[in-house]
Figure 1 (cartoon, rainbow, N blue to C red):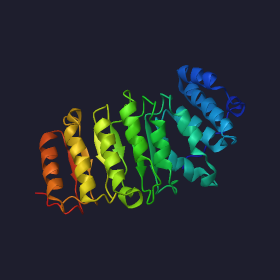
Figure 2: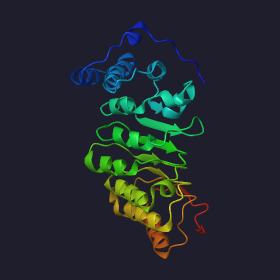
Figure 3: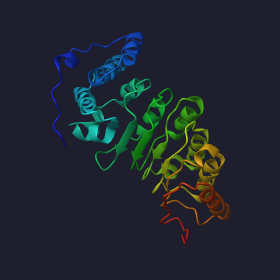
Figure 4: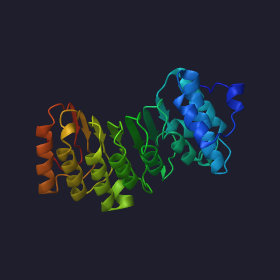
Length: 271
């Protein structure tokens, strides 16, 4: 990976700010330097509130991303850079993202580094007030702790939520969280205020009943019929349920803009 640039004296000198000062700093972001600067004091303030020292690696990473003009906050890449990945306290960073308008994507893939079990929960909480994040990827958590209830709550309560792309591939939702998890995901999809462009749930091992609820939500989300372009559902149970197959057929007819559909290992024969 690209070597990290050294922290500037300004970044090293950051001291925790009050919540009001942090919000003011976030609102003042106008260029690459202040984009990093506005997020970092808020992160430091929340870390101090949690009585934890801020991560210098995280400060360096965000500064580097801003200087490179990257709008992607890649947590998997960040964790892979740490000597002790478990030492990174995610909650202060997710809290700092609540009002940050620079980053538009949050990615995390287990192929880069082991992901915390509560990562989906932490990312979902960041969406409660955020208005800029359009792309969420949390891939490959084999034993997620929670997060879908919080995702549904964020989609329902934050009417300015900009999320249009969701990728939970390889995150084994039902096996770890039970049937209710798929229903919570269905609630989240139905409540999304922005038109959904891409949904990837391959390898989530969701049973037929849960898939029927998810597909019904997509059918009911009329503003997504024209926008949905990618639907990846491989590795979930669809073909075993007559109702699930019926709903899938209805959805595929409604979404004229679909250019990529993945249904491998679902018990579905695609003509």
